[in-house]
Structures are given as C-alpha cells and as structure tokens.
Image 1: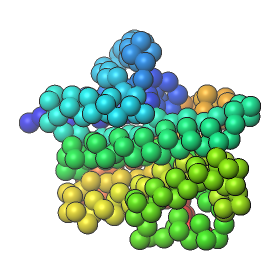
Image 2 (image 1 turned 90 degrees about the vertical axis):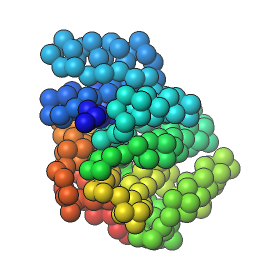
Image 3 (image 1 turned 135 degrees about the vertical axis):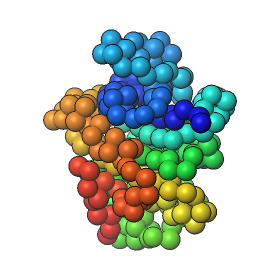
Image 4 (image 1 turned 180 degrees about the horizontal axis):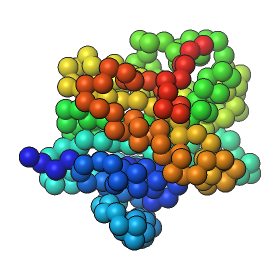
Length: 275
C-alpha cells in the first residue's frame, strides 16, 4: 500500500511552517514542505530536523503552472496520489506606495487564481478520504460585509459556480485598473477580496466533489487567526503554532466526517457565511 502524503504550500516560514511541524507530529505519512526558493525551503526542513522531525522538501511556486505540474508528477510517481493538501501560500501588500491596480492584480493572482490552479492540477490525485484545507482569513468575512448587497448576494449564493466566481474576481481587477472597484460594489481591499474568493471557492469545490461521487474527500476554508507573521506586519497576537491549530484540525478530520464539509472555520468552529 502506498505511503500517505501531505503537502503544504508556502511553508518555509510563518503559519505554513507551523502546519508542517504539527503534521509531522500527528499525521501518519510523509509531510512535504514547499517553498518557491529551494535554499529557504531546505533551511526550513533542516530546522525541523533539528527538532527531531522528518519533513520532505519539494520546490513549488504556485504562480508557476509548470512548477505545479512538476509537483503533481512527483506525487504520482512517488506516492500514487495525495492525502492532504493545505493551500497556505499567499501574499499581502503593506506598502501604500504600490499602486492599487498592481496590488489588485498580484494579490488576486497569488491568493485566488494560483491557488485555484493548484487545486485544478492536484485534485485528480486526491485519494479517497483526502482532506483539503484552503487557508483563508477573517478578512473574507470583513470583505463580504463591505461589498454591495448585490455582490454579497452573489458571493453567498449556494449555487454559484467556479466560472461565476472567477468572473467576479476578474471584474474586480479590471475595475481596480480604472480606480472604480468601489463604485462597482467591491470592498476596498484586494487582500479581503482575494480571500472572499478562497472561501467561496472552497464551498464550490465541496459541492462539486460530492456531486461527482468522490469518496469522503472533504474541503474546508479556514482562518488561522491573527498571527504574528510577515503577513500581519507582525501585529498579530497569536504564535505561528497557535495559528496552525485550525488548519491542522481541518487537515486531520476523521474518515467519513459529516461536518464540517465545504465550510469556513474559525477557532475550529464553523463560522457564518451569509449576507
């Protein structure tokens, strides 16, 4: 029987690093730490090895489709499939000097479009009982509240499709290029909007997997909390290990769990996603 395997994207530092650390202690299988930069990734692996843990490393830049393909091929050749996927990689701009048009383009590209690409490439490799965790943020709820009523209705529509969601995110980027995104009903933050995309994407993915007859594959989005990392400009109050708790909880949900499935979680509990 093939050895089980977990992959955590963007995991050479911050919450992703702590997720790898926790999975190494709790998951019965190999845990793959990924990073864009091989040197930083290998250094992170070495640090965890110094703690007596045994993560593996594979280079992954989620913005590079060919890099994602290489990871998929490696997983298929080495393990024959995938058991846990934690989509943690993400960015946020803290420099107000960066034009908003650029922020909107790059933030949605990494946080939403590239994460969606990772899912599209790796989902066919998911084995029965696989768990997918899309690391979102409480910012998705905050962003939803700041969108127009029309957009809130669309983002909370239980029948929304990936194509519809993608078109909404693309429209935000287009309007941001003209400085008209708020006029169009969107929230004023590209990060918030990108995380709305991640949360809604997760709900759609669960619905589609269930409709396809997938055997106990569970997808959830979650908020790690306000963690002290570069992403929060080190203003967060939680340690990275505290931030890893909810993502790891989602990653290790037991077989045939009925809930949570296709939900958004905070502090290991289902959080409301509504207008």
